[in-house]
Length: 417
Ligand SMILES: *Cc1c(COP(=O)(O)O)cnc(C)c1O
Image 1 (cartoon, protein in one colour):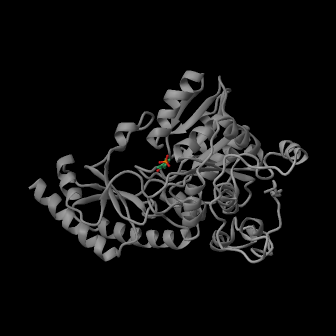
Image 2: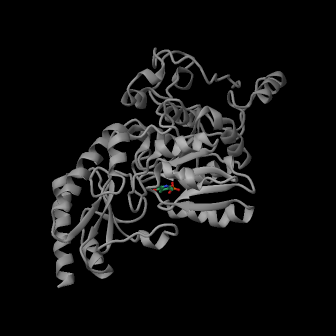
Image 3: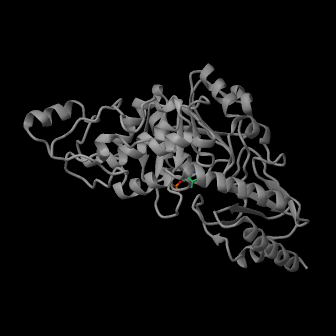
């Protein structure tokens, strides 16, 4: 087996005659990363999906071939850590979902993607502005890894918008956003923050796991590094861990170099599962969105519910930014109960028949989780009328889920009684 060259701008004949960005995202989800050289057989014909290529060693036909490969190790099979067509296919398909992006790197988890993206753009002496509503492990990375390296983190109000300009100091190098926050659901004014960053030459990073590029094409909105926990909606079936970072042209080389230096690579089996999940992302998200909005509207009408924290509802902080910038909502939101305590909230959750109790989300199945955003804030206060429950609305029938939740609210009322 030779080391066949795979040109990054390679011909996509048979998959798409037009540049991908002129096609609608649903089409790009289907065609992306299915290059003929990854699916066709030398003997003619081919298969639909780039197969699982498991590799550590890649073999060269001659010393001359080996030397050519060493001169351009990103251009074809080189060594397993640099991936095989299985990983390249997924990375290319993710890049094609982000108009304006230069490329995508894959990681063994969303947290690894976040950590590597931060390391790609920060150096000792720099300051990072981090949104106060961020995912807790992101906060832990700043505390446990960045701080000892001499990289300071300053937390800011998720709703600060263009006011972020007032926080930018001489050493500020990067602004990290997560929109909406995955516990408290504030939607950030990402374009305003990116504009302020650009005016001062700063790099912007966004944890885009909730919306995915389908509902928020981050690079197009001005973000430099768009991060996904693919574990959630891309894999979509709760059976693999994976992360990705998609970069603007300006930061693509830095991302590539840091990813390689940290030895980050992903298993072809997990990449295959994510690639398979990606093909149905649009139809799954549309169903998650429709059911979640129906259930959130129903919850908002229940006397036990104080507030629904769903970006598509005016009761959610940052709702206007969602309405302006997003093409949809996903299946994850929260609601706050009126009064009550943790025990009553547990009575609600424990008896649910269709909602699992567990971390993560984005799979086909529904989940319920008690959350307390107060516990992980430092720059802003978060207040609630009572316990908060986060729901992931899966692909079950929405009426069945509502019946399950109605029984749960009855248990809650009795537990208060
Ligand atoms: C789950 C999650 C992550 C981390 O992803 P893993 O794949 O679990 O490491 C990062 N950000 C958000 C918003 C998440 O929900």
